[in-house]
Image 1 (cartoon, one colour):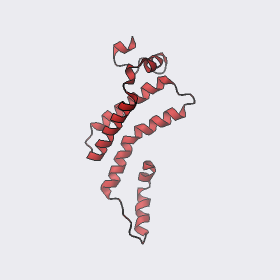
Image 2 (tube, rainbow, N blue to C red):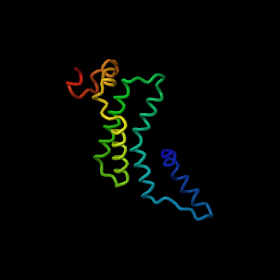
Image 3 (cartoon, rainbow, N blue to C red):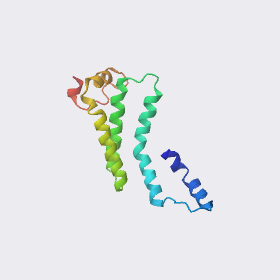
Image 4 (tube, rainbow, N blue to C red):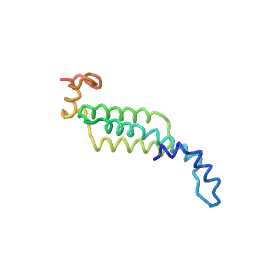
Length: 131
């Protein structure tokens, strides 16, 4: 919904300007905030699309996808953002860690990922994890 809202920014502004009613409008800073929030939420959308697109999602994909989201959030956190966007990044990262924990230490996910030829040796950062 946020994606569509930001795509229709000019149409929304034009329509509100044509209305005869007193309507609260978004300030330019708020439109910019919506654009930046969309960038933060984009990795979650890609995760959902990827997992939903597979007919039979496998456990081997879970580890790869969540590591990708964590890397995206860390990269976004290095950029200077306003307080609201940074708060969204922080809460997204903490919720992700709270809900899934440390997947790379779970044999339920590391073994299938290691055995899957698509991901073998790609995302294992510690040599100890391969053993």
